[in-house]
Amino acid sequence: MYHIRVASPMDSTTEILGVLGASTGAVNVTVLSGPARFPDGDIVECDLSPEVANEVIHRLRELG
Image (cartoon, rainbow, N blue to C red; front, side, top):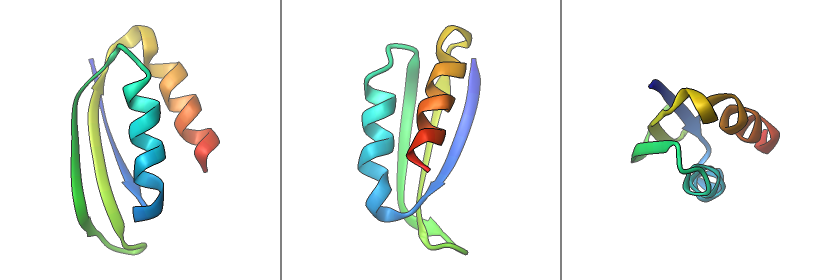
C-alpha cells in the first residue's frame, strides 16, 4: 500500500474524493476540512493499492 496526502483548495476536495471513490484500490480515505495553510484548504489522505496507484495519481494530477 502507498499512503498519499493531498493539500487541496476547499473547492477541489469534492473532485478529489470523486477520483478516489471511483477506484476500488483507494481505501482508508480521510478528509480534514480546513487545516492546510499556504495555500489554505483541506487535507485528503488515503492508502492506494500498488495496482491502482499510478492511475489514481495521474487522474489527481489532471485535476490540477
